[in-house]
Length: 460
Image (tube, rainbow, N blue to C red; front, side, top):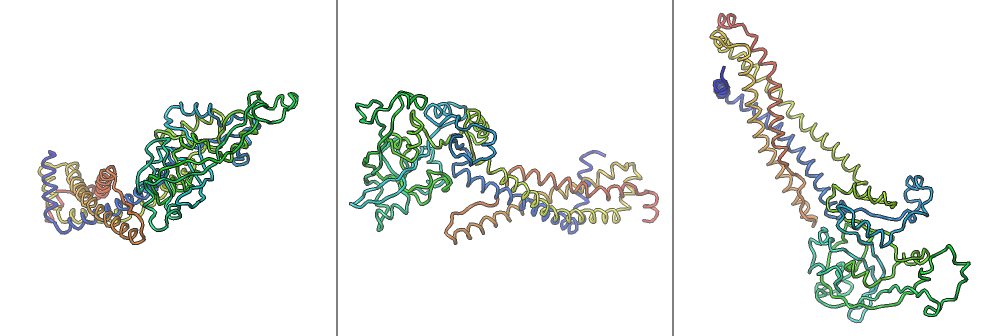
């Protein structure tokens, strides 16, 4: 039997019992719709979690510390390295090496110091933190009032909204464009020679082996003041409060904080070690989140301790994998019920069309032709049921998104899409519907093929 004739017969037979075949097709559509709605909900929730974490600027960031610091923080790492005191320190040389690694876009220190803002004759204390220019991509700046820094070392400041209300309780937005004075402590290294520094002479025997001859003896902190222009106000902490630089109220360009040479709590440690400036933590920004593991391995080989959010999200990915599995199982239950409806419909068709099948076989149709005919009918119901199910599932998903948006709006939260239909799921759902329908048609097709044409014509 030719393919065209087979298709024509299948369509004609489906039209003869419109109500029964239509109800069966609707049953398939309901099963596919439930499957699509469940899986799309799982995809939407996973993308929502990923989007929120990615928007926090954490997925593409590696945090680097020296093994000399934070001992006991990672006991397993401490056991691997028996002599952490000999590990390299985070200095300018190490920072430069990391900046030249492949896929690395920036390497910045975590700067957080106490400062004072003087405005309208009043003094207000707050933590000053440095932000790189890439922080503009962070979701905390989506609702930025004003604008972001014009340059990496511009004399500008962005204030947290709560702090801005302290400066101007009546109308904090009026601060944008005005100047404020920042008071801070400047780190000044003491000179190495006794004449200029005034420090007492120390015998060479006491200093041998402890530090290099050109090391700074110590440092002093001098109070400085810097005029800054308020360019923006943000409502929430950047990076979701998950980084040291998040927990501040006054935000400056990170290059400006280094230019001002602000004194922080790591200065004493750097002075005791001797040598130049060292950092407590460096944040390494990676061009592609997929390359974070590769960059992390390269930095680890340099002898530093590393951490990325990807280390903490392994369990999160495992959770969503299990969630998708269970949602798929529950969604497939309705499709399983629809499979029984297909079997019932085709079995009834075999009983009603015994005479037709007998005539077909009497004039030369083979058992294979009869099977193909019933398979074609089952596949057609699966295809149309799959298409209708996609449309129904899409409508359900849109209703979920609308309902979620209304609920979030009532709680004064931004709208979020919790249901997302990926393109691959559309094709997969239709293909799965056809395959299930064909499997359901196995028994009725085999039963129809086994009919004896003599017996069917004799009793008809």
